[in-house]
Image 1 (cartoon, rainbow, N blue to C red):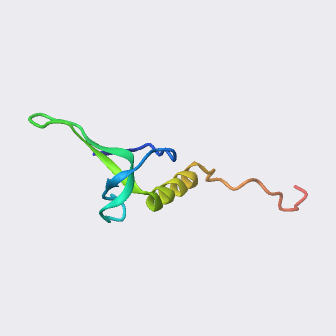
Image 2: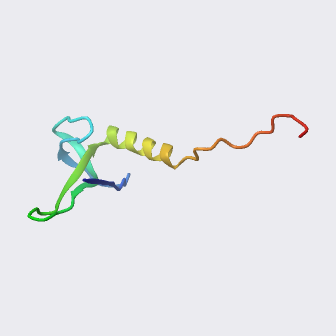
Image 3: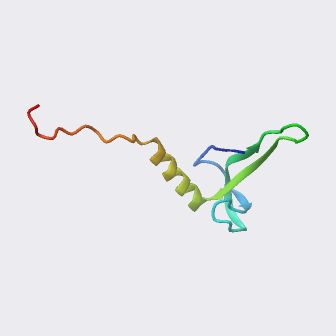
Amino acid sequence: MTIRLQLDPTATGALGACFMCARNHLAVVTVGVLTHTGGPGHQATEIPLDACRACEGQLLLLLADTQRSLVRPYVAAGHPH
């Protein structure tokens, strides 16, 4: 199974269920697709993932954290060598 998220802060919403907080009847936007490739005797499926605006904000913060550099910038220790 694969989850592909495509966050669009300008997306228009509809009423539905949030896949992250599992609340119903909220204004949600589609933020991605859950896909399962078909195999022998199985069909490929795609399920749209909807999130409420609060959870969309959390996803945007997670995305920003993952794009940040994992290495701290070099700071000289003050040693002459």
